[in-house]
Length: 267
Image (cartoon, rainbow, N blue to C red; front, side, top):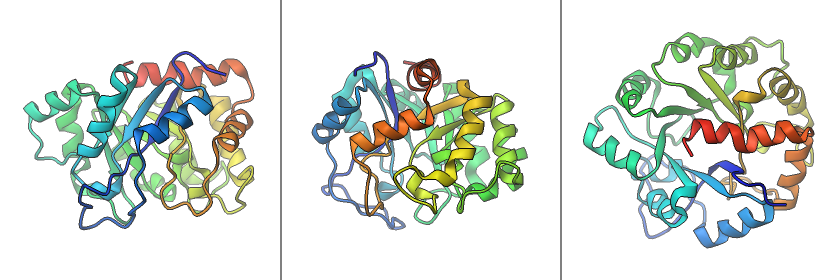
């Protein structure tokens, strides 16, 4: 069923005509706007946030070209370093950019030592930092993250590898980030951290249940299409079932899929 304003807040496009970054570790097959539109239709989604994948490093051209095809229903999270100028940030903002991505696992283009500098550069433009890391690092990074001049979006239920109990110090750090109103969490890509696996990725249920109960207005939902690096990616039907499993209350589901991304991504 279509839901007006429903948003997929994390997915990627790939095009072999563009060179991969030297540090890239993932080289997925091409994934096109036409293919993604079928996924959108199957899931009843209207809006999309296109995220620069690690494959292309600082070269955002593939995602920018795709975003142009989706027009006003698309936003972009790009990768820029601390040397980016105001003119370029203004240009990217006009094209739909609302965030700067940091991927702190193997293959990422940027490291912790430039996080604060990039946050300072993007703050005047109303962007946020999107962060993917092993969530077990969060306890040691929480003061830095809360102290940034921008909000922080944490990918993939924190991507705790392996999943931790809700009493764990790093999950408590994630909860503190959310409770501070400085952070958001994406409910997405459970296969990146789950040890129990499909169909329910049950070892993530306690974390998601805690976040949904305590901070439904700071959560986002995403497909992570085309599921780069996942050997057995979920189908749209499986994604829809997981979405309802995690968000069984229709009002909360609307908040997470519609209201929250409308606020964060300035739709």
